[in-house]
Length: 291
Image (cartoon, rainbow, N blue to C red; front, top):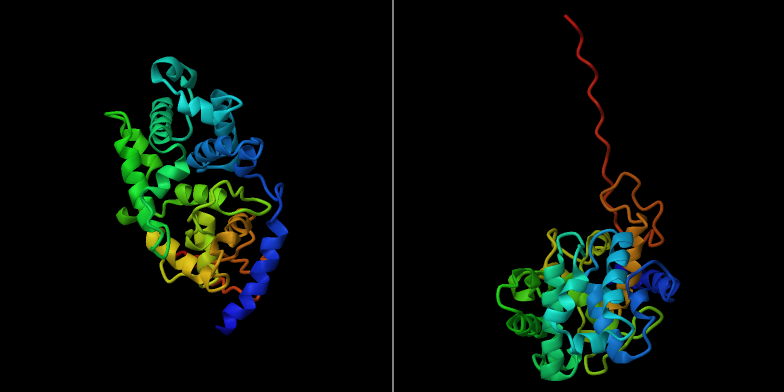
């Protein structure tokens, strides 16, 4: 508890330093350009879906997809017709996501809107609100979304992972953070899910910093680690544990975290609150004498 008491003010300072719209290059900034809540909801899902890989590549891919969707992504999704619109995606590739996968994704989004009026409405149909976090709701959301997918669209499964299968669900948790929370970075589009139930989006940077801060006992990424790190952050802010995610992620992206690295915490703004477990460089053996 004493260590957590020292960690909270350090994390609060880090959060304040990053809590403004242009704190760092991030796909959420592309979503902010839309004024309408329904457009932000759809644009946010598209942006979070492609939020893997190098930031520059992510931003380029998101820009291409949003350009296809036009000035009102919600209207485009609601009227999406593969027969008319699929050719617009020709040649679009993001890492292993192909044009056909994005066409299938838009088909799923259209069916969500037809059934529930919004992605929030579709999500809430599988959320009874009594669970400690949104894990069970995510299981339901992904299962029902895949039931909306076109037959044979195997690639769309990548967009809808499940906690019960062990996935950390990084991109879905990122989307929920954008939609549920409201501050200088997050958009607060949704109103019926409480921030206290969110789970941290588990990427490689949050894994490293979370381990350095002693927030998890797990060594392998997955849903148990995501919940474990969130539980540690919830002890610092029970109402809004995921508020620290953006800052922790970008701290890792800046290479400031020294967990298991030779430099330790000499560059880290959380220095003194973390335990970086410095990796020692191996000494090279002296050359053996020639006979």
